[in-house]
Length: 99
Image: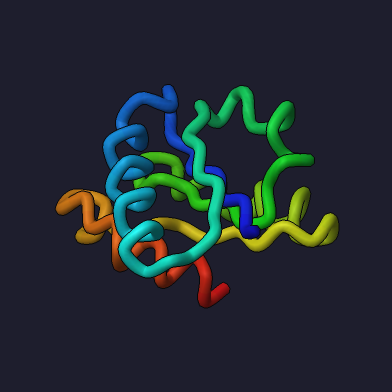
């Protein structure tokens, strides 16, 4: 089972995307655990994360998160702005799993 964490400024705007991604995972029969947290709290969840997706509003943090978490085996990427805006959970899930 892959564990995916979405990070945004406050952890609120990604909750709907998490719901859409969970619906897509059931449809695609993919075993995942997906959660959303504010960037300030991610450290607490890092041990529970295989894939870290940053919301577009915190994309500026990508170099910092890559440097800190990729050596620990966590894949880090920014969610595509268009997919985020459209809440395209299926596409975001597929891109996360392809990392």
